[in-house]
Image 1 (tube, helix red, strand yellow):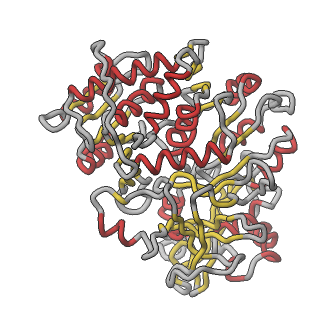
Image 2 (tube, rainbow, N blue to C red):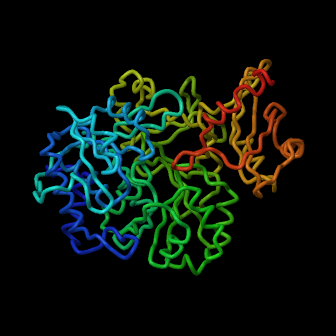
Length: 508
């Protein structure tokens, strides 16, 4: 039987096939080939084995983005370890939780942060360093480890912690099969090949940057312009030598603000992907008008990788939708209480089934069991509906649903009505406690013009014809910007906390 084609094995195959091809194109003109990356992977693998990493052991990483960070990921998979990428913004207290919960055998940190983590080193945990210039203890020594652990599809490959906006973060365990199958489905759906040149400006501690963008390049023999961060001018300068950009909505709003964004600047580009947060329909339409390219939106999450996508070809890319299920994946909308599938057009709980769905939450068997139906479908916690063309529309998170006077209010519906007002750039609708209704609707809006102050009465009059009375916001608050996480998702939990006492506090 042939070994299971893990992400590492697929990369190794590409490295053997095209050793001198650039894998990473770096700012400043330097490039790193597949051959050089493969050697770095084997060097890091040797270090991990020397540190005592055995199949199933966790290898945690909190370092800045670099080619060596990707090599660490691949080396961990090579030796059968479980890769645990952590946000570089996490504080010492947050890191303490992840280290205690995941119990890694090795923790890799930036050289300048070694002093913050040196106290963690003991017989069970080795602390290594990895910098952005090929420096750090992880790269000490010239020895290489050639042996590849024969992983099976169900073996754990990575743990990604959920954002933890409510309660403690949960570690989603993703198998080799999860990563490989999802990557293959995306490569097929988006027609990704060795001829592609990806602009990679995403972080590599997240599904989008690592398990979507990087995996697709690594397994197809493509190349990537590997940027430490997004800069509109830099990206525009790279477009004539690129074919694909994968980004979050903020990327596209910043590109739209640049005069250099024209059909000519995008002439060699074939695909623009947006995800991790909803893209405003107005931005979708403006981008297509400016460039001739329709941004492709897709839907995924930490526990499942990507679930759905708008079509690459053979159908419209519809603003406000995330398309249809990827090959091999099934998506349904059901009644949250009964699990009974709902007719198209009705809002319900989104559930997913397929080889992309994670194996469970790390050391939380009861929580894992509660998130799956008896027939194996995963309960995503998202709300949505299937439209007349069979496309999925995300309405919001289940926890963001507002139940006012016993009636359900879906924030997305109210937000779309508010966003249509010319003085509103974007909005976030939340539920806050109310003495009569239990919960009521509050709208937080960002003005279209900096310093603008849309009038509450005007906004309410504007949305009135489109919304039933119980959906109308009882208060509108104008802010300069909405709080977001690193991937651009609006942090509604923070907004709920901020306006929690609006109708029940001392100033209500």
